[in-house]
Image 1 (tube, chains in turn purple, yellow):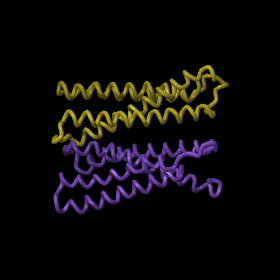
Image 2: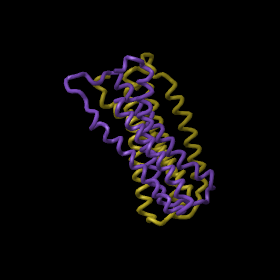
Image 3: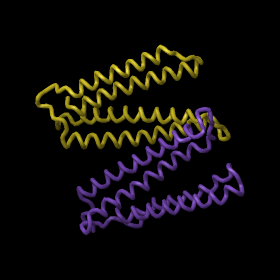
Image 4: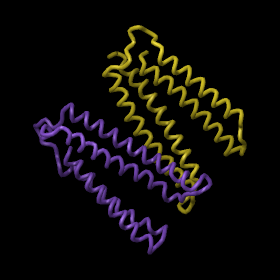
Length: 140
Length: 144
């Protein structure tokens, strides 16, 4: 579980950093609608989804216990909470920054959902690593 | 009925009533282009009364044997929370896709609609959570 979490954290961090760099670089050159092409780098985060294929469970060994399940539940909750908070921010910030009469292009709406999904997996993985990190040498 | 069930029952009623009122006000405003002020006052009064009555009902013990919370309650709350979060995400995706199809690729929407989306999914989350708690208690009745 920790190895998979590491792959998720690295893939998502790389995707977000590359997207931010691409969007910043393209913004000055091509302007607002075309700059969204820079978000294509977020697709790198999908590599995290392949991690369970590389780190398969050992057959014949006990691979998880009650503590693992508790950690998984708490991490999933952390992931969902982070995603929900981000959705809340994405919905409220434009209202307070641009005012109630402003409009937002429809093309940005699916981005809210995508960012929420990525945030969920990122915080889920970070929460797993943090909780196992607290356990010291008992984790392996 | 223990405290968790009473809380779930009260919040289910409270949030369902709120959602119905909000949808009524929105329908009146968007379809008939009218602000129905008395419905807004009625909604606020109903919300206040249900809140006070619900609080009294939850805090008052119906039986001396009633425990505040145990391990099973915690597990049920956790499962209900997951159900609530997952349904919120599905509802959010459905709302965003519907908006995109309705408005079209090049269209735009008012930012107030985003706050409304957030409001509706928050209420839906509370309704699903409460309903899930009650359903899980219902299914686990034989083990209670």
